Image (tube, rainbow, N blue to C red; front, top):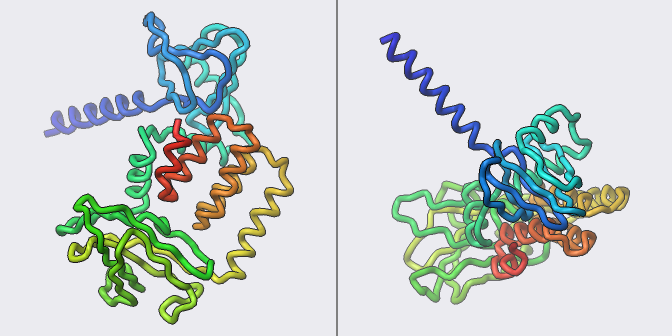
Length: 315
């Protein structure tokens, strides 16, 4: 038995080591000029680098004359390459580990997380995003969740809210929209049958109260969906106070693209999805349409359920 346990322990260590080796050391953030890489030093084939290219141990990066590449390391530090020639990822990673923490580490942590999402398109990105938020089918014969906006756990403070959902694969034209006060209880605040894929409701109605949380679901009539998406109706004064705080911090900054992304990130994390989009777009403008910021804006559009617009920015 001891021998079996020992072998099992060694096997677990080996599997862990393999998994660790499979993690990338860097991801490409921005570049200019011609930059290529190859998987191993012995390889003859070079591949083009673009924003979001992942680099692993053993990879070799090559810069042509006047080319530049900014890398984000897994420890949320940055490395800028501007010297023409070949650079080994193993050596770059060791140097990065010795560097002190970046003063904007929170920003680079966000970039690392976003740029390592290798979704092929806006739809798959949105689907993966909703899985991480918990907006998935719980089984029990329920149909696939089709709710789009408000996004999962969004905070809202306008006089009216427009709820939207995808067209169901069955071709249904009438959908049932239900609002709940609780995620699991079946007590329904409101239930409506709607023709089409959107519904606008005033927040001044008696069943909605500022400062309260609610849940909603949309599904083809007669085919219930058990996944409920939460949203919060925030008091106008509370929303304006929080947004003003973020605006003031941004206005006091150098107002770089990174500053705009930081403002967008804080707004989105707080649940203010639409307000975050303004700053993500501002980053694109400030960067003069740099690819890396177009990617971030496209990702926000996908998270916000605006898939057709997101595809136009996807790269």
